[in-house]
Length: 472
Ligand SMILES: [Zn+2]
Image 1 (cartoon, rainbow, N blue to C red):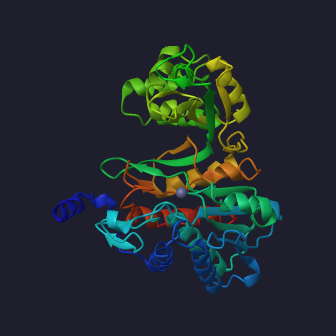
Image 2 (image 1 turned 90 degrees about the vertical axis):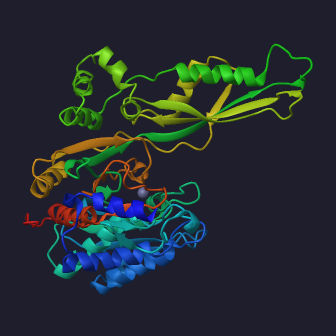
Image 3 (image 1 turned 45 degrees about the vertical axis):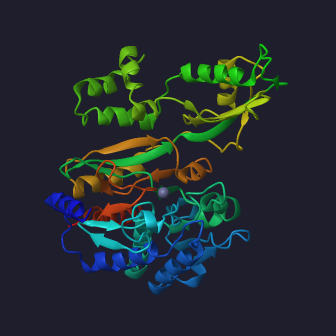
């Protein structure tokens, strides 16, 4: 294993190697290290400890106590959140919100090659739980707030920071949704920057595109349930709960929800067509955007899971429970059908559609969990996109900005429907499958992280009224 690691290290192309860190990089690195090394898992960690540590960092930069809020829900003492505010000259509702979560997915030391709660720099990477998801962004935003505070430059709008807990375990507690419900005035903003976007490198380490996430699909689980009087298995009857459920699930598997587009996905396909190496896929990306879409192109595109997932609502059976004894006819059969709903459709509309597809009143379809609010994706206006495109061109000349809609999963799904349009943008460039967020040995390229810090710092400054600066 050691030999393998060394050879992998040697394989990192020189373009991925970081230049010697600047004094600013090192100051940021200290914040990042402190944050990564505080265990914030649900099982044994504490976001509250991390929130206090970051509050101390902000206080040291001159942000006053009155503008730093540690928010802890009474029932969840270790799920603390932090909000900090830098005041600008515009009204509060024109604020910009920097949102990042500080909780992390569980990490078992025995399974990891290195201690997950020690920041280890090795072979051009930072290793550790949360190095990417999402303590990279959380530490960068703390560093940005510190820099703005220390510079004393007059801001044209408030810059707010929200570090939240429970993004990874929202069924227990979710800080973003808690803040919306209980402290809306603290985080109110005209838009928010969040995780969910990032840049892509090719296999040689060259930047391909800088992704900006605008909108996500809505996550909804449905319970399918069939009941039956059952009986002795030696005397099978015509109706059977398991067969009835299986037939319903089979119909769901054969059903394709209608194709839909929005401005984000249209922008994604139009721009990705220019970057896609396979000529057929590139042509199909253009032809599905015609009115009406080319049906053959659509048929091919829906066979590619990553594109299929953003072309329409998808539903798939993920769990089945049925029967109660090997020698009895089943009295009950149920399944979980997991849907990722295209923005704009309500969970109830999809539930009714599933009832039609199944076409069997004996199969009862209900929400497995209360539905979340849905909304169309946040608009990619020139005010939002302009600074991102200008800065991307400055730092990575010729690299396009690509909008994307993801198949669900960030705190943006709470903020956008609540009226704070939330965009995923980081300028953090990674290779496909490199980051390993949620998995073992999570890591991030040192050079990418330092570049992301520079990118986000400049981006926040542009949004907050600073003149454009030379990033070199
Ligand atoms: Zn995350």
